[in-house]
Structure formats: structure tokens, C-alpha cells
Length: 232
Ligand code: IPE
Ligand code: IPE
Ligand code: MG
Image (cartoon, rainbow, N blue to C red; front, side, top):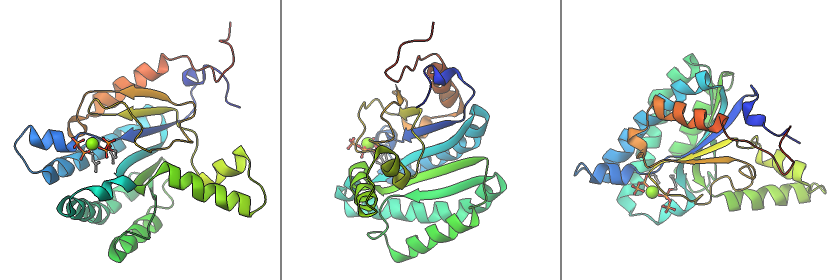
């Protein structure tokens, strides 16, 4: 059981980000939506570099939801292409920076070449120990919970602990969503049970190191009680 006021401890943080607003960023510049997604990759680079200095040890980012398959074919293709290029160009830097990369979500609906790229990048970065970067791709928290519950029940032991172990991530300390939307959109429903939420109107491609710093600073002023009473 986590202690109350944990956010003021010096413990390492799990921060989750719903990287939203790429389309609106592009529209405001009269650009194609794909250009917004490209610019979003730059924002992700900035945040990954800044994360260890903010005491973040796990960073989970929402890149493509299982519901995003509903988007036009051209946009989905552009996004898949962007993920391929990200894995291709970024792996070396991630290794250098001590970042372990994991892709979370379903893989059976992704193109085979992308799955191979994912496996290659995960293997190359597996020794990273400064930051665990988890990128959610074809991700649905509800589906993840169902799968985890099936596995735990199949092993004859379905408890909070075994289900959490199957999900494989620490509880989220802070969830950030950009672009002004204030919803979870099927992201980390289990892991966010006691997360602090930070909503900002900043569009994801404009999100910079200072925005991360500000969000963390606000987080450190929150009082987390986990159902208990505030310490005297
Ligand atoms: C987030 O930006 C990226 C993905 C969902 C893939 P959006 O594409 O949702 O941008 P908006 O919400 O339309 O501005
Ligand atoms: C959630 O954003 C998914 C990602 C950021 C990848 P959406 O833009 O798809 O969410 P809704 O549709 O506004 O809830
Ligand atoms: Mg959106």
C-alpha cells in the first residue's frame, strides 16, 4: 500500500501522457494532419530527454488507440509510417541515453514489418536503465485488463496483485493530457486508480521541457491520501 503524501517523497515517478492535439496543431497552420503527427514526434523527443531529470523512471505515452483504427485510411497509414521511421531513426539515441523501449498494446493487427521493427528496437534497448519508455500502440486499457484477467484466472489466481503483475506496469503517479480534452479515452484505466491528473490546453506538438517541469511541480503540491487521512 503506498503511503499518503507519496508525491512529496523522492520516489521515482511513473508519468503517463495522452499526446493529443496534433490534428488541431496542423489545422491551425493550414497543414495536413500528418504534419501535426510529425511535429508530435519532436515533442516526444524533448520529453524523453527531459524525463530523467524530473525523477521519472517510467514514461507511458499514448501514440495510437485501438479506436484510432476508425480514422481515415490515409491518416492511419501515415501514422504507421511515422512509427516505423521513429523506431528506425531513434533506437541508437535511446540506447545511448539509457532508455529501455517497450511497445504496449496489440500486435496482431500491425503490419508484419512494423512488428519486426518493434522487436528489433526492444531487443536493442533492453538494457536501458535510466528510463523505461512505454509507447502504447493499438492500445485499449479495457482489452488489456480483459487479457490480463484471463491469464491470471487461467493460472488459478485472480487478485489485484496478479492482475497488476500481468499488466506489467507500476501505478501511474501523474497523468498528463494535452489539448484541453479531459478524458481518459481508454488509457491505463487500471494503473490510474490513484493517479493525479494534469490537463493542459497546450497542443502536443507545442509541449516543451518547461511544460513537463510545470506539470511535475504542480504534482508535487498535490496531497495524495490513497483513502487514508492526511498525515498530521
Ligand atoms: C493525437 O492527436 C494523436 C493521435 C490520436 C494519433 P490527434 O490526431 O487526436 O489530434 P486532434 O485531437 O485531432 O487535434
Ligand atoms: C487518444 O486521443 C489517443 C491518443 C492520443 C493516441 P484521441 O484524440 O483519439 O481521443 P478522443 O477521440 O478525442 O477521445
Ligand atoms: Mg485527439
